[in-house]
Image (cartoon, rainbow, N blue to C red; front, side, top):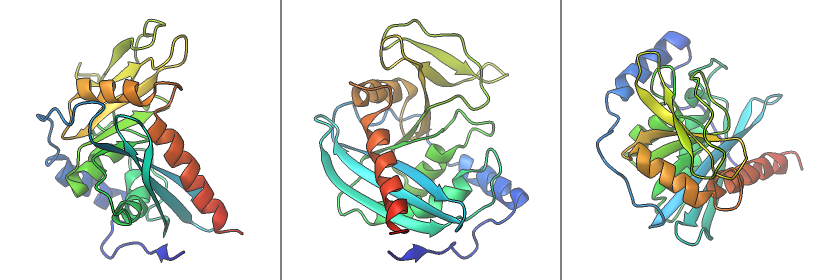
Length: 230
């Protein structure tokens, strides 16, 4: 498998990356509802790291949004493009994720990231970053909250509570996808509403806590990383 090198001109230090975040954040579209849940295609993206060799494997899995059957899968392996800095993880992952998306022959439709969009200290997590660069509707579904506290949702599937920034802005929701199970953390990335993002998450998580997009992409990127050592 060809290794994707760090793109020329890619930010390599924290101050440059923050400046790029500021520039790209201004291009996020927040006034579109996005595709209706259960329609078209939905693509899960995720990454896995090989820290010893400085590599990151990205996976993109395209599903039929109604039936959740897999239409296409693609992977890419790249050099880790940025040091580990909380709040700037997208700069480590985006080149490999773009490589996986570029390998698809089918249109990805809505992209679901294992991470954050607006629910980010600078309001610009991976889902927003990827959405702006691709101009596709994107959303984030994270396993754990980043820096925002929240009340406990009711125990039933579909219950949610806001994730609020210190200024009171609702930047996402803690959403219960299964009865009596820990919530996931949903936020807007680009060109989708928070209501629709939560509805998509519930549709995609019909059997398990995590969306089917995330479950399949997680397994695929880990398999791609394992293939490098065989």
